[in-house]
Length: 417
Image (cartoon, rainbow, N blue to C red):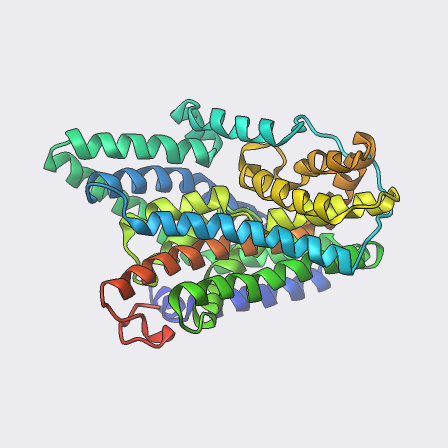
Protein backbone atom coordinates (compact mmCIF):
# COMPACT_ATOMS: atom_id res chain seq x y z
CA UNK A 1 0.00 0.00 0.00
CA UNK A 2 2.87 2.38 0.71
CA UNK A 3 4.28 1.68 -2.74
CA UNK A 4 0.90 2.46 -4.31
CA UNK A 5 0.60 5.67 -2.28
CA UNK A 6 4.09 6.72 -3.40
CA UNK A 7 3.19 5.97 -7.01
CA UNK A 8 -0.01 8.03 -6.79
CA UNK A 9 1.78 10.94 -5.12
CA UNK A 10 3.88 11.52 -8.27
CA UNK A 11 2.36 13.66 -11.04
CA UNK A 12 0.77 11.56 -13.81
CA UNK A 13 2.68 13.48 -16.47
CA UNK A 14 5.99 12.77 -14.73
CA UNK A 15 5.08 9.09 -14.49
CA UNK A 16 4.20 9.01 -18.20
CA UNK A 17 7.52 10.65 -19.12
CA UNK A 18 9.37 8.07 -17.01
CA UNK A 19 7.48 5.26 -18.74
CA UNK A 20 8.27 6.81 -22.12
CA UNK A 21 12.00 6.97 -21.35
CA UNK A 22 12.13 3.42 -19.97
CA UNK A 23 10.22 2.06 -22.98
CA UNK A 24 12.55 3.86 -25.40
CA UNK A 25 15.72 2.60 -23.71
CA UNK A 26 14.46 -0.98 -23.52
CA UNK A 27 13.34 -0.81 -27.16
CA UNK A 28 16.86 0.14 -28.24
CA UNK A 29 18.65 -2.42 -26.05
CA UNK A 30 16.30 -5.40 -26.24
CA UNK A 31 14.25 -6.41 -29.28
CA UNK A 32 12.13 -9.10 -27.67
CA UNK A 33 10.57 -8.61 -24.23
CA UNK A 34 7.12 -10.22 -24.71
CA UNK A 35 5.49 -8.70 -21.62
CA UNK A 36 6.10 -5.06 -22.62
CA UNK A 37 4.05 -5.04 -25.87
CA UNK A 38 1.31 -6.78 -23.90
CA UNK A 39 1.18 -3.83 -21.47
CA UNK A 40 0.51 -1.45 -24.34
CA UNK A 41 -2.11 -3.73 -25.87
CA UNK A 42 -3.93 -4.11 -22.55
CA UNK A 43 -3.91 -0.36 -21.89
CA UNK A 44 -5.31 0.60 -25.29
CA UNK A 45 -7.79 -2.28 -25.13
CA UNK A 46 -9.04 -1.17 -21.71
CA UNK A 47 -9.51 2.42 -22.89
CA UNK A 48 -11.32 1.32 -26.04
CA UNK A 49 -13.53 -1.02 -24.01
CA UNK A 50 -14.61 1.52 -21.42
CA UNK A 51 -14.88 4.57 -23.72
CA UNK A 52 -18.19 3.62 -25.43
CA UNK A 53 -19.83 2.88 -22.07
CA UNK A 54 -18.44 6.12 -20.61
CA UNK A 55 -19.78 8.25 -23.46
CA UNK A 56 -23.17 6.54 -23.47
CA UNK A 57 -23.76 6.73 -19.71
CA UNK A 58 -22.26 10.20 -19.22
CA UNK A 59 -24.25 11.82 -22.02
CA UNK A 60 -27.55 10.27 -20.87
CA UNK A 61 -26.90 11.32 -17.26
CA UNK A 62 -25.84 14.85 -18.19
CA UNK A 63 -28.86 15.47 -20.40
CA UNK A 64 -31.32 13.83 -17.99
CA UNK A 65 -30.28 16.22 -15.21
CA UNK A 66 -29.40 19.21 -17.34
CA UNK A 67 -31.17 22.36 -18.40
CA UNK A 68 -34.16 22.53 -20.70
CA UNK A 69 -32.02 23.00 -23.79
CA UNK A 70 -28.39 23.05 -24.85
CA UNK A 71 -26.95 26.55 -24.39
CA UNK A 72 -24.75 28.62 -26.66
CA UNK A 73 -21.60 26.75 -25.63
CA UNK A 74 -22.52 23.89 -27.94
CA UNK A 75 -23.04 26.17 -30.92
CA UNK A 76 -19.67 27.82 -30.26
CA UNK A 77 -17.76 24.56 -29.81
CA UNK A 78 -19.34 23.12 -32.98
CA UNK A 79 -18.29 26.24 -34.91
CA UNK A 80 -14.73 26.02 -33.56
CA UNK A 81 -14.48 22.32 -34.45
CA UNK A 82 -15.54 22.81 -38.07
CA UNK A 83 -13.68 26.11 -38.58
CA UNK A 84 -10.41 24.68 -37.26
CA UNK A 85 -10.72 21.66 -39.56
CA UNK A 86 -11.33 23.94 -42.56
CA UNK A 87 -8.35 26.13 -41.66
CA UNK A 88 -6.21 23.00 -41.24
CA UNK A 89 -7.10 22.04 -44.81
CA UNK A 90 -6.02 25.45 -46.07
CA UNK A 91 -2.74 25.19 -44.12
CA UNK A 92 -2.08 21.81 -45.79
CA UNK A 93 -2.84 23.19 -49.26
CA UNK A 94 -0.66 26.26 -48.64
CA UNK A 95 2.21 24.11 -47.34
CA UNK A 96 1.96 21.77 -50.31
CA UNK A 97 2.16 24.68 -52.76
CA UNK A 98 5.27 26.07 -51.02
CA UNK A 99 6.93 22.66 -50.59
CA UNK A 100 5.53 20.44 -53.37
CA UNK A 101 6.09 16.73 -52.79
CA UNK A 102 6.31 13.68 -55.01
CA UNK A 103 6.05 10.11 -53.78
CA UNK A 104 8.08 6.99 -54.37
CA UNK A 105 5.13 4.67 -54.89
CA UNK A 106 4.90 1.46 -52.86
CA UNK A 107 2.78 -1.66 -53.19
CA UNK A 108 -0.92 -1.13 -53.75
CA UNK A 109 -2.85 -1.06 -50.49
CA UNK A 110 -5.95 -3.15 -50.03
CA UNK A 111 -9.17 -1.95 -48.50
CA UNK A 112 -12.72 -3.19 -48.15
CA UNK A 113 -14.42 0.19 -48.42
CA UNK A 114 -13.30 3.08 -50.60
CA UNK A 115 -15.74 6.01 -50.60
CA UNK A 116 -16.58 7.29 -54.06
CA UNK A 117 -17.28 10.86 -53.00
CA UNK A 118 -18.14 13.25 -50.19
CA UNK A 119 -21.79 12.35 -50.66
CA UNK A 120 -21.08 8.73 -49.78
CA UNK A 121 -18.98 9.75 -46.76
CA UNK A 122 -21.77 11.92 -45.39
CA UNK A 123 -24.36 9.27 -46.26
CA UNK A 124 -22.38 6.65 -44.32
CA UNK A 125 -22.18 9.11 -41.43
CA UNK A 126 -25.96 9.53 -41.35
CA UNK A 127 -26.57 5.79 -41.62
CA UNK A 128 -24.20 5.15 -38.71
CA UNK A 129 -26.14 7.65 -36.60
CA UNK A 130 -29.27 5.50 -36.61
CA UNK A 131 -27.52 2.13 -36.41
CA UNK A 132 -28.48 -0.31 -33.65
CA UNK A 133 -27.32 1.33 -30.38
CA UNK A 134 -26.18 -2.00 -28.93
CA UNK A 135 -24.14 -2.66 -32.07
CA UNK A 136 -22.70 0.85 -31.92
CA UNK A 137 -21.59 0.25 -28.33
CA UNK A 138 -20.03 -3.12 -29.16
CA UNK A 139 -18.23 -1.85 -32.28
CA UNK A 140 -17.28 1.55 -30.86
CA UNK A 141 -19.06 3.65 -33.50
CA UNK A 142 -19.23 6.97 -31.69
CA UNK A 143 -21.55 8.87 -33.98
CA UNK A 144 -24.21 6.23 -33.30
CA UNK A 145 -23.41 6.12 -29.58
CA UNK A 146 -23.66 9.89 -29.30
CA UNK A 147 -26.90 10.08 -31.30
CA UNK A 148 -28.73 7.46 -29.24
CA UNK A 149 -27.31 8.74 -25.95
CA UNK A 150 -28.74 12.18 -26.75
CA UNK A 151 -32.13 10.67 -27.63
CA UNK A 152 -32.24 8.54 -24.47
CA UNK A 153 -30.97 11.42 -22.35
CA UNK A 154 -33.68 13.80 -23.58
CA UNK A 155 -36.31 11.09 -23.04
CA UNK A 156 -35.01 10.48 -19.51
CA UNK A 157 -35.16 14.19 -18.77
CA UNK A 158 -38.76 14.37 -19.88
CA UNK A 159 -40.09 11.14 -18.38
CA UNK A 160 -37.77 9.80 -15.66
CA UNK A 161 -38.40 10.31 -11.96
CA UNK A 162 -35.80 11.68 -9.56
CA UNK A 163 -34.85 8.15 -8.44
CA UNK A 164 -34.01 7.17 -12.02
CA UNK A 165 -32.02 10.35 -12.54
CA UNK A 166 -30.09 9.63 -9.34
CA UNK A 167 -29.37 6.12 -10.61
CA UNK A 168 -28.04 7.54 -13.89
CA UNK A 169 -25.83 9.96 -11.95
CA UNK A 170 -24.47 7.12 -9.79
CA UNK A 171 -23.84 5.01 -12.90
CA UNK A 172 -21.87 7.83 -14.55
CA UNK A 173 -19.81 8.27 -11.37
CA UNK A 174 -19.04 4.54 -11.26
CA UNK A 175 -17.89 4.49 -14.89
CA UNK A 176 -15.88 7.70 -14.34
CA UNK A 177 -14.08 6.14 -11.38
CA UNK A 178 -13.26 3.07 -13.45
CA UNK A 179 -11.78 5.35 -16.08
CA UNK A 180 -9.62 7.10 -13.47
CA UNK A 181 -8.18 3.75 -12.42
CA UNK A 182 -7.33 2.87 -16.01
CA UNK A 183 -5.75 6.26 -16.69
CA UNK A 184 -3.71 5.93 -13.51
CA UNK A 185 -1.98 2.95 -15.15
CA UNK A 186 -1.16 4.97 -18.29
CA UNK A 187 2.64 5.04 -17.58
CA UNK A 188 2.82 1.25 -17.94
CA UNK A 189 0.71 1.29 -21.09
CA UNK A 190 2.78 4.11 -22.62
CA UNK A 191 5.97 2.21 -21.76
CA UNK A 192 4.68 -0.84 -23.65
CA UNK A 193 3.53 1.20 -26.65
CA UNK A 194 6.82 3.08 -26.92
CA UNK A 195 8.81 -0.14 -26.59
CA UNK A 196 6.81 -1.71 -29.43
CA UNK A 197 7.37 1.28 -31.73
CA UNK A 198 11.08 1.60 -31.00
CA UNK A 199 11.86 -2.11 -31.21
CA UNK A 200 9.88 -2.87 -34.39
CA UNK A 201 10.12 0.31 -36.49
CA UNK A 202 13.50 1.41 -37.74
CA UNK A 203 14.51 4.75 -39.19
CA UNK A 204 13.62 3.83 -42.78
CA UNK A 205 10.44 5.92 -42.67
CA UNK A 206 12.54 9.02 -42.05
CA UNK A 207 14.90 8.33 -44.98
CA UNK A 208 12.54 7.01 -47.68
CA UNK A 209 9.68 9.41 -47.12
CA UNK A 210 11.31 12.00 -44.86
CA UNK A 211 10.32 15.13 -46.80
CA UNK A 212 6.70 14.08 -47.12
CA UNK A 213 6.54 13.18 -43.44
CA UNK A 214 8.18 16.48 -42.52
CA UNK A 215 5.56 18.42 -44.49
CA UNK A 216 2.71 16.50 -42.86
CA UNK A 217 4.06 16.97 -39.34
CA UNK A 218 4.98 20.60 -40.04
CA UNK A 219 1.45 21.43 -41.19
CA UNK A 220 -0.03 19.70 -38.14
CA UNK A 221 2.29 21.57 -35.78
CA UNK A 222 1.37 24.85 -37.50
CA UNK A 223 -2.30 24.09 -36.83
CA UNK A 224 -1.63 23.09 -33.20
CA UNK A 225 0.66 26.01 -32.36
CA UNK A 226 -0.64 28.84 -34.58
CA UNK A 227 -4.12 28.26 -36.02
CA UNK A 228 -5.85 26.74 -33.00
CA UNK A 229 -4.30 29.23 -30.53
CA UNK A 230 -5.40 32.08 -32.81
CA UNK A 231 -9.01 30.87 -32.71
CA UNK A 232 -8.83 30.60 -28.92
CA UNK A 233 -7.26 34.06 -28.59
CA UNK A 234 -9.96 35.65 -30.77
CA UNK A 235 -12.70 33.96 -28.75
CA UNK A 236 -11.35 34.55 -25.23
CA UNK A 237 -9.22 37.67 -25.92
CA UNK A 238 -6.40 36.34 -23.78
CA UNK A 239 -3.08 34.52 -24.18
CA UNK A 240 -4.16 31.04 -25.40
CA UNK A 241 -0.89 29.16 -24.97
CA UNK A 242 -1.28 28.15 -21.29
CA UNK A 243 -4.48 26.34 -22.30
CA UNK A 244 -2.93 24.98 -25.50
CA UNK A 245 0.06 23.48 -23.72
CA UNK A 246 -2.09 22.00 -20.95
CA UNK A 247 -4.23 20.25 -23.55
CA UNK A 248 -1.24 19.05 -25.58
CA UNK A 249 0.37 17.73 -22.41
CA UNK A 250 -2.76 16.25 -20.82
CA UNK A 251 -4.37 14.85 -23.97
CA UNK A 252 -1.87 14.94 -26.84
CA UNK A 253 0.78 12.76 -25.20
CA UNK A 254 -1.49 9.79 -24.57
CA UNK A 255 -3.23 10.23 -27.95
CA UNK A 256 0.17 10.21 -29.70
CA UNK A 257 0.96 6.75 -28.38
CA UNK A 258 -2.50 5.18 -28.40
CA UNK A 259 -3.14 6.51 -31.95
CA UNK A 260 -6.86 6.34 -31.26
CA UNK A 261 -9.20 9.29 -30.70
CA UNK A 262 -11.79 6.87 -29.36
CA UNK A 263 -9.40 5.43 -26.81
CA UNK A 264 -8.50 8.96 -25.72
CA UNK A 265 -12.07 10.03 -24.96
CA UNK A 266 -11.79 8.93 -21.29
CA UNK A 267 -8.48 10.81 -20.99
CA UNK A 268 -10.07 13.96 -22.41
CA UNK A 269 -13.06 13.78 -20.09
CA UNK A 270 -10.76 13.40 -17.11
CA UNK A 271 -8.79 16.44 -18.30
CA UNK A 272 -11.99 18.48 -18.73
CA UNK A 273 -12.94 17.70 -15.15
CA UNK A 274 -9.54 18.91 -13.94
CA UNK A 275 -9.99 22.09 -16.00
CA UNK A 276 -13.11 22.86 -13.97
CA UNK A 277 -15.54 22.42 -16.84
CA UNK A 278 -19.24 21.61 -16.59
CA UNK A 279 -19.85 17.89 -17.05
CA UNK A 280 -23.13 18.56 -18.85
CA UNK A 281 -21.12 20.39 -21.47
CA UNK A 282 -18.05 18.22 -21.95
CA UNK A 283 -19.99 14.95 -21.76
CA UNK A 284 -21.48 15.86 -25.15
CA UNK A 285 -18.79 18.04 -26.74
CA UNK A 286 -15.83 15.64 -26.25
CA UNK A 287 -17.35 12.62 -28.05
CA UNK A 288 -18.71 15.05 -30.65
CA UNK A 289 -15.18 16.39 -31.15
CA UNK A 290 -13.83 12.87 -31.56
CA UNK A 291 -16.24 12.56 -34.48
CA UNK A 292 -16.01 15.90 -36.33
CA UNK A 293 -12.94 17.77 -35.02
CA UNK A 294 -10.45 16.23 -37.45
CA UNK A 295 -7.73 18.81 -38.14
CA UNK A 296 -5.04 16.17 -38.57
CA UNK A 297 -7.15 14.07 -40.92
CA UNK A 298 -7.84 17.12 -43.09
CA UNK A 299 -4.10 17.83 -43.31
CA UNK A 300 -3.33 14.21 -44.25
CA UNK A 301 -5.99 14.06 -46.98
CA UNK A 302 -4.96 17.38 -48.57
CA UNK A 303 -1.17 16.85 -48.45
CA UNK A 304 -1.25 13.26 -49.70
CA UNK A 305 -3.71 14.09 -52.51
CA UNK A 306 -1.61 16.99 -53.77
CA UNK A 307 1.53 14.82 -53.54
CA UNK A 308 -0.25 12.23 -55.73
CA UNK A 309 -1.12 14.94 -58.27
CA UNK A 310 2.50 16.17 -58.32
CA UNK A 311 3.77 12.62 -58.77
CA UNK A 312 1.55 12.18 -61.83
CA UNK A 313 2.63 15.55 -63.25
CA UNK A 314 -0.84 17.08 -62.87
CA UNK A 315 -0.95 20.85 -62.52
CA UNK A 316 -3.34 21.93 -59.76
CA UNK A 317 -4.87 25.40 -60.06
CA UNK A 318 -5.65 27.59 -57.06
CA UNK A 319 -9.46 27.25 -57.43
CA UNK A 320 -9.10 23.46 -57.56
CA UNK A 321 -6.90 23.56 -54.45
CA UNK A 322 -9.58 25.56 -52.63
CA UNK A 323 -12.17 22.97 -53.61
CA UNK A 324 -9.80 20.29 -52.30
CA UNK A 325 -9.60 22.10 -48.95
CA UNK A 326 -13.39 22.12 -48.63
CA UNK A 327 -13.65 18.47 -49.71
CA UNK A 328 -10.91 17.50 -47.25
CA UNK A 329 -12.82 19.24 -44.46
CA UNK A 330 -16.09 17.46 -45.21
CA UNK A 331 -14.36 14.12 -45.69
CA UNK A 332 -12.35 14.50 -42.47
CA UNK A 333 -15.51 15.19 -40.47
CA UNK A 334 -16.90 11.88 -41.72
CA UNK A 335 -13.67 9.90 -41.39
CA UNK A 336 -14.78 8.09 -38.24
CA UNK A 337 -17.65 6.49 -40.19
CA UNK A 338 -15.39 5.05 -42.90
CA UNK A 339 -13.30 1.89 -42.50
CA UNK A 340 -9.62 2.80 -42.43
CA UNK A 341 -9.95 6.42 -41.29
CA UNK A 342 -8.37 9.35 -43.08
CA UNK A 343 -6.03 7.35 -45.34
CA UNK A 344 -8.88 5.63 -47.17
CA UNK A 345 -10.37 9.02 -48.02
CA UNK A 346 -7.30 9.93 -50.10
CA UNK A 347 -8.53 8.17 -53.31
CA UNK A 348 -11.76 10.16 -53.14
CA UNK A 349 -9.82 13.45 -52.92
CA UNK A 350 -7.41 12.31 -55.65
CA UNK A 351 -10.37 11.86 -57.99
CA UNK A 352 -10.66 15.67 -58.09
CA UNK A 353 -7.45 15.69 -60.14
CA UNK A 354 -8.24 12.63 -62.26
CA UNK A 355 -5.63 10.48 -60.50
CA UNK A 356 -6.12 6.79 -61.30
CA UNK A 357 -7.57 4.73 -58.42
CA UNK A 358 -4.66 2.24 -58.51
CA UNK A 359 -2.15 5.07 -58.15
CA UNK A 360 -4.23 6.62 -55.37
CA UNK A 361 -4.21 3.33 -53.47
CA UNK A 362 -0.42 3.19 -53.77
CA UNK A 363 -0.40 6.60 -52.09
CA UNK A 364 -2.55 5.09 -49.34
CA UNK A 365 0.07 2.35 -48.96
CA UNK A 366 2.74 5.01 -48.43
CA UNK A 367 0.47 6.51 -45.79
CA UNK A 368 0.47 3.22 -43.93
CA UNK A 369 4.28 3.09 -44.09
CA UNK A 370 4.73 6.51 -42.49
CA UNK A 371 1.64 6.07 -40.34
CA UNK A 372 3.65 5.19 -37.25
CA UNK A 373 4.55 8.89 -37.06
CA UNK A 374 1.90 10.59 -39.21
CA UNK A 375 -1.05 8.89 -37.52
CA UNK A 376 0.39 9.50 -34.05
CA UNK A 377 0.78 13.25 -34.64
CA UNK A 378 -2.61 13.41 -36.38
CA UNK A 379 -4.37 11.77 -33.42
CA UNK A 380 -2.56 13.98 -30.91
CA UNK A 381 -3.65 17.11 -32.81
CA UNK A 382 -7.26 15.94 -33.12
CA UNK A 383 -7.61 14.83 -29.51
CA UNK A 384 -5.94 17.85 -27.90
CA UNK A 385 -8.09 20.11 -30.08
CA UNK A 386 -11.24 18.48 -28.72
CA UNK A 387 -10.40 19.69 -25.20
CA UNK A 388 -9.00 23.06 -26.34
CA UNK A 389 -12.20 24.12 -28.05
CA UNK A 390 -14.55 22.59 -25.47
CA UNK A 391 -12.67 24.54 -22.80
CA UNK A 392 -12.73 27.68 -24.95
CA UNK A 393 -16.52 27.51 -25.23
CA UNK A 394 -16.80 26.88 -21.50
CA UNK A 395 -14.55 29.78 -20.52
CA UNK A 396 -16.29 32.09 -23.00
CA UNK A 397 -19.49 31.50 -21.05
CA UNK A 398 -17.63 32.27 -17.81
CA UNK A 399 -16.55 35.64 -19.20
CA UNK A 400 -20.03 36.47 -20.43
CA UNK A 401 -21.47 35.73 -16.98
CA UNK A 402 -18.82 37.92 -15.33
CA UNK A 403 -16.96 34.98 -13.84
CA UNK A 404 -13.17 35.15 -13.82
CA UNK A 405 -11.10 32.88 -16.05
CA UNK A 406 -8.84 30.19 -14.51
CA UNK A 407 -5.60 31.40 -12.97
CA UNK A 408 -3.47 29.90 -15.78
CA UNK A 409 -5.33 32.18 -18.23
CA UNK A 410 -4.77 35.27 -16.13
CA UNK A 411 -7.96 35.06 -14.03
CA UNK A 412 -8.55 34.27 -10.39
CA UNK A 413 -10.59 31.06 -10.56
CA UNK A 414 -8.64 28.04 -9.32
CA UNK A 415 -9.12 24.71 -11.05
CA UNK A 416 -7.64 21.39 -10.02
CA UNK A 417 -4.90 20.91 -12.59
